[in-house]
Length: 200
Length: 185
Image (cartoon, rainbow over the protein chains, first blue to last red):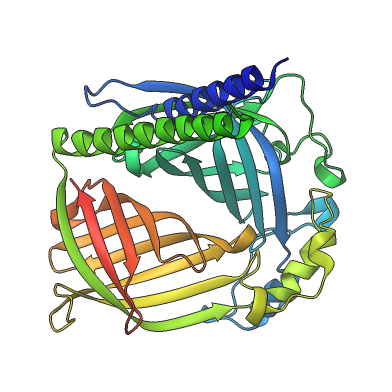
């Protein structure tokens, strides 16, 4: 293929990609008050876990609330089998794509989960697109097959947005994790995100 | 005509498209704000107290001992907090005095940030602003050494009940202070 033709096609593809990316970035443009729906695919990028076992143990005898009684029988403190435990923190980042085949990058996301009792985490979520960011909160058990993030706000072209992100496992995908949640940890699996946004 | 000319023209074409698209996005954003009743408020803040929580031991424990079965190979290296931190799992707490003037003579409230650091020195921060007419809550991601970042306003009390919008925060050069540009309704 002639060099000039190749370059022109590359330039054209680059221009289309830029415009396309910006197009994906403005799903929340709803000055009319209508709801916007956007489907995005998330691929796990980085993950981390803060195991606060020693701080939990210290807090049992030394805390400003006095000698409290837990009131329930707790499982053995074996993180790999029975965790996460209250006080643990999970951090998960994702790359976002506008298509299931992951050819069109759409942005990035982060989920930070503060775990409490019954394996349930309260998670801060942030979805970063080219035109702005959408943030929200979710609460779900570590083994949940799906979860919803309640959108609490946005910036840029998503300013003032509320709504929800329904998160499920992307079809045909399984979690790469082992341990207690082998195959079940949605936070470590490729996901399908359905955003439903509306102005507050 | 040399191929280099074509490279330059193509690069200019791509750059021009990107700039036009970005400007259109900014213009549309401004239009959206005006059409939807957002108004602007500029305040200033200065850091009052800072507390950093270095969770290195808990982070190290979590690298291998976690219920999800993953192992963070890259995290096993020794962490130099002074040089390369903050690291995933660290926390930082900030309190601020909020002023109505850039010279910071007129206090109008206080603010508090709780920032949970994750990867690449990014943090998710929860913020509250306690002002004379009510409180505002906000949140969002920021980079550790960024001079500017934006938080989404998530709610409020008093005069700010049901508020939405954003806060654009810019670090000022002197005195650990920030300019806060609120766009809210």
